[in-house]
Image 1 (cartoon, each protein chain N blue to C red):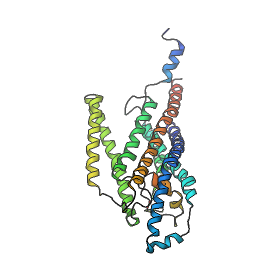
Image 2: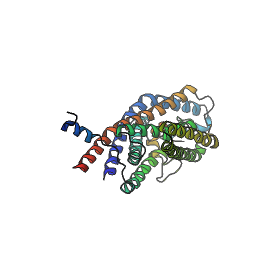
Image 3: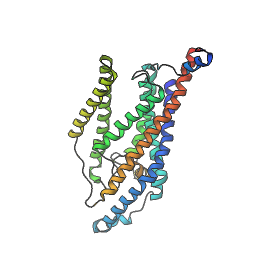
Image 4: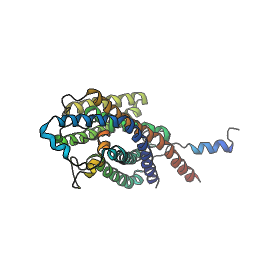
Length: 74
Length: 247
């Protein structure tokens, strides 16, 4: 009774964690971190402390978010 | 490929959590932003040298700033941290402990909220409009990001030491030592970094407090939702993976 096929299927469904090899992780980590940092830069710092695009359009658009998310705004 | 699938799900979870955080910010944060802007306007109205401010054209209307602007900022922020979160999860899974994906995701979300939000906010709390001198913006931005960087580094160091002690003694001692090291190093860092005090004379303390509550509350909504949602999504990815590996 203890080893019915149904119980075995459940044992397969909850595996012991196996670490993902670092080599499989690195390319995705580089891609993901770069993408995330670009997004955070535009939300948090563009047209504030640093400015790549001239004007205040980006700053004004994300203004409230920048304040509420905790970034120094102006 | 499994990391790619986890990364995509992390960004998705962050994006969905951001929608909820936007609602929270809209209800609890925006009234305080409006009060702060009203304070700023009243101050400028009494100040002749700033009279030109009233004549400046509005680039983006308040309605857009508090609506689509806020939503865009929060969704980009949530997506970005969802990605970073998924990568941290991919590395920690099967390495940090033997917890299930759901439990590990919640643990990491708590750690993320602590290191990326709460600890930096204790030193450099979020400020509403009208608080802060524009001339020091570059300095404040730099110290804020340095604080986040140090917070994350200290958390990583404390975790490594906690793991070592856990292997030598037990998990209870290891975790307590890690927490002690984290608190001590953060206290030293925050003592060493320069203070910023730019709250203008007469700014209502209640507005400042409510704004900061709303800001931290919104982040709590974001991180907890992201952790819970990612736990469910990651469980699916990882069980599919292990059952296909056994076939």
